[in-house]
Length: 159
Image (cartoon, rainbow, N blue to C red; front, side, top):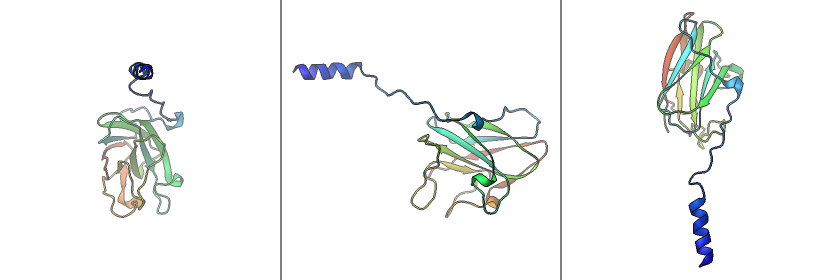
């Protein structure tokens, strides 16, 4: 009987939720400050929920290295919030680029994939192209960024 009372007292004094660990977002992964008319790319991501990390990546043209470090211009990581979120990239020069984004819900800094290589976490591309079999090619996601900059919206796809 004493054991049950002590156990109940411990349960009543214990916090209901564990303290959240800080997200592993590094300084070099910060978004650029959004400044109007400066040749930047502003990316708005829709379909985000307030858990984990939102990763947004800008890529230069590449037939062999799209979605790999070799063609990535910059990766931005931010804490995922509720609703649409926007980030800005300083673009090296006008031209064709592609953006890929994913919602890293478990905050492990990696896109979780299913057995067939398809994303397990919400994922999106700059052209809002749907994934069919395997990951897309650069030409499936590319768009023009003019000298004055541009803005795009990506809707995350949940699989």
